[in-house]
Amino acid sequence: MQQEIEALLAVQSDDSEIRELEKELNALDPELADLDRRRAQAAAAVARAEAGVEAEEKRQREIQTRLAQHKQQQERNLAQLDEVKRLKEATAATAQVETTKRMMAEDESEVQACTKRLADLSAAVTSSTKVLNDVEAEQETARSEIGAKKDALNEKLGAARSIRDKKSTGIPRSLLAKYDRIRGRKPQALFSLREGSCGNCDTALPLQRRNMMTGTGQIEVCEACGVLLYSETA
Image (cartoon, rainbow, N blue to C red; front, side, top):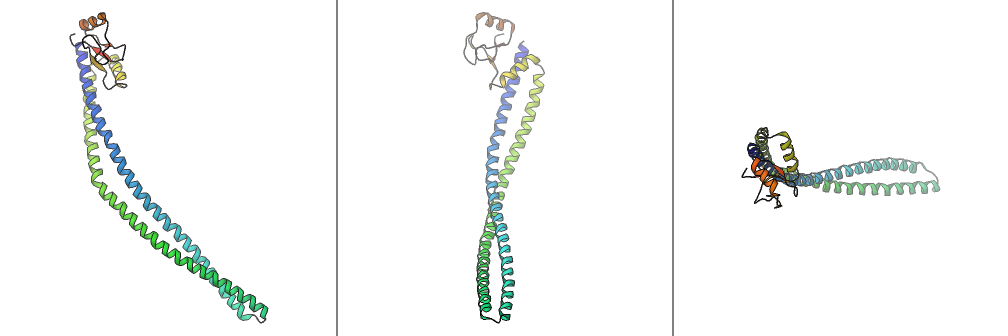
């Protein structure tokens, strides 16, 4: 039984080391998430600016098409005006020419406005792209360092788990399963008796159980807190 206790204590020591390595590894996740968040924000700004350019270019094409149509219409209007002979027809044709002329002026004004907006939006694309490139360049070293830390920790974890698995082969399966089940709920599963009481919750054990543990080296479960108990004087 003493060998089982020693083996279980060795496994518990390895589990403590593994838990600390896992904490270190998990602590890197928020750092990486923050880098991802900042890059995503910069990339989203580029996407918004590019979408704005695309929408404005589409609007500009539509206005230019409309302007071309109005120009063609004006050519027909002028040709028709040249052909009319009566005053009434001339008045109507002239009104049509003036109406189309106003529409062409509005189209040209909108084209100019679109051109200005496109210049501003293109500048926004250039600016936001530079910010994204700066963020990526700035993060390159940080990401490389985090990646190196993760690789080193994963290597240590792999080695520690391998050692732990080898040591656990000397522990009866039923006892190891009970230990693992308790460890899943508590940071530490195995405690020694402390002056006849549970080393975790200080609940006193009946004298008969204490004597049995001392005499045989038996590992017992604390009825109060559920951890495994052993006697150092076994």
